[in-house]
Image (cartoon, rainbow, N blue to C red; front, side, top):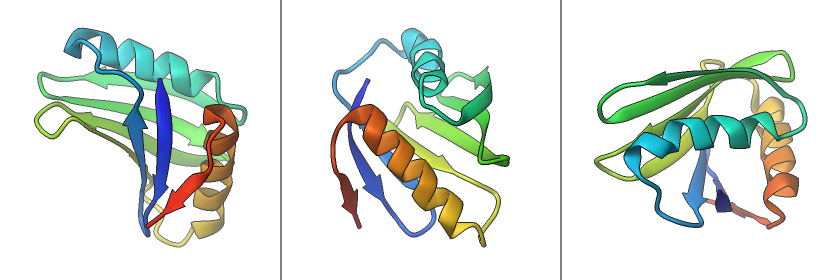
Length: 104
């Protein structure tokens, strides 16, 4: 589903390989996250123009987001102190995507 991962200071940005229909994005995003080793308890909440996924990685709560108006995908966490967990998640996603991480 994604082919580029950008690592920012407080979130991870994902770039999709292809454009998807708005109604397909939530289930596809959820299914994709469920395939990443270490990610568990993925829950989907879908609104009109925003999709949010809640999940756990390394026993920490994370959020996956898609915003229709900006066509943006990103992952973040409520924890501002857990940079190691973000690095570990970025590495797991990088392996799943099969690409190197772009650090920004």
